[in-house]
Length: 117
Image 1 (cartoon, rainbow, N blue to C red):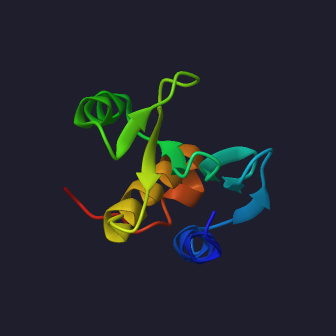
Image 2 (image 1 turned 90 degrees about the vertical axis):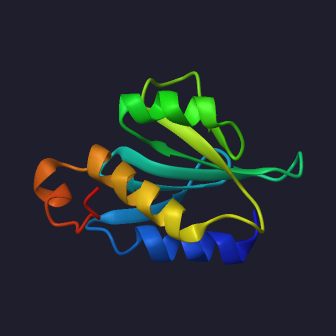
Image 3 (image 1 turned 60 degrees about the vertical axis):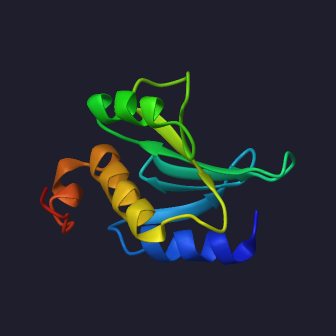
């Protein structure tokens, strides 16, 4: 995983209340309490991935969009995105903020400014 990407992700996620970065079984993850907000990993197949949480209707939409998005089979509200030199970091920051708000206790999520749709 390119170190600059981990630092960039940490800059996005580290500003959220009580998020901490830690090594995962593979790659790096960011958690609030025991809930994982995002997990970045990959490279052995020349592809880098980040997984995060989304509302169930958004999971279905991401699944239909195709690359760079993908769905995962281990959770009904988890999706992923392939990271590369063309990644839209602003969009990813919004998706990660949404993931945080789904995973964090309500009193912490209420502290986060989110764009209104």
